[in-house]
Length: 222
Ligand SMILES: [Ca+2]
Figure (cartoon, rainbow, N blue to C red):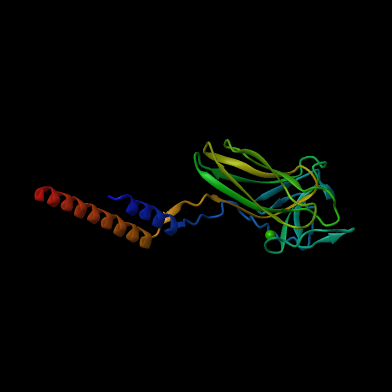
């Protein structure tokens, strides 16, 4: 086969692949349940499948309604839906939110979430995201205000089993929303691309066969 058809085949494959959809492995990743309207912020309790931790009272972490405001502090408008998760200062030891998930060895995942601070608080929002199964911890920061940063972490699990996904405050108070954990997209060849690639390969084979025939004919003439 000539080299040109091979390159064309690869180009078509690259252009026509489509990523496979993968479900969100995190339950209640947008923190919309339970309803936070009547509890505002500073909850230190189980929220859906998330568990929020902290010393208690108004020093903990928990669901916060969109745009909640008090004492000169204004929380961000929710990145998704009408509420998010608030995790207080690192000085309030153990303030974090966590959920148990399952990972599979040698599988690549993508974690995405949004991070913001609070208008009126100068603390830098910093959060450690931690996973077991050989993944480890990665730190993320956002601007010291209520503007959301959309963040992504691509990683590969080394072992199989359940582990805890946690977000721990490492600086100023943080807000988290729109958490999505999914298996990394795997390119999948679409039917039309497979047909186009097949035609290119067949064309290349036909060209090669004709070239060989021409050479054989030329040899006989000599
Ligand atoms: Ca939300």
